[in-house]
Picture 1 (cartoon, rainbow, N blue to C red):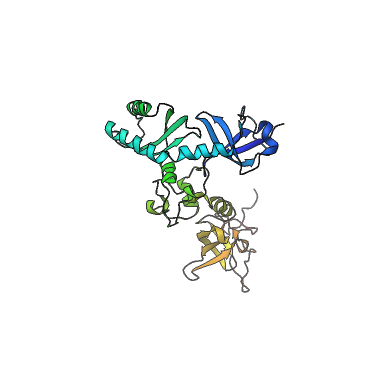
Picture 2: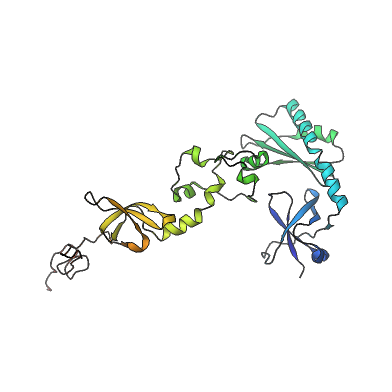
Length: 308
């Protein structure tokens, strides 16, 4: 069985699986390889070897060869032309006036045979860029031109800059390889304010960091009673006023006289909502002999009905 490798085409891009073919013994993580993709020939960096490839992925493409120093030099030459090419694309776009469309970047294939124009739109409506394609085709006669629309998160990654939290470089442009689905449920589980200014990133979407500790909060909450539930504590029965998942404890309201107190999970026990508290004896313990929650009489201390 041949080796399967994970290849990344951008610094923080998605990892794609390829068959190493006959080059498996000479390739190591960090090396560069030449592969044929839907966008022509590309140079990617080997991110890892895939020990347990998932079944059902279909036929994987085989890499062409390890990249040589000449290949890397050619790639760098075309990369240096991208800024100049982006200026040309924007100039042509201004003449055609595409409202709400912004062009952020261009990418050349490593040998210059493919040109990808990356853009975003303010609305979900489809934009006809055929006039722009025709203009660019007259300027770049050797390249196959493709337009790729990206979402707000990808735009934020491309532009980089200061994060909404004050981080010097945004998470998406610093270490996030892929974007995970984020929901408002994650903010609620962590007790984060739902103020849009506090949970929204520069991209205008929910912050990616909401998922970082979500699993820990969700797992911790499963072991703790919910807010409003009755619990037995060392100081008596009360209702949960607040849940502290990462402290593995809760704040319990013990009534007007005793106020509130915080207890750890092992110090509390759930109480049946339908049960009435048993009276306390002189030593402070519950006396169930005269009809408490677990006494021999009924739920409310009434004697059992005689058998008919």
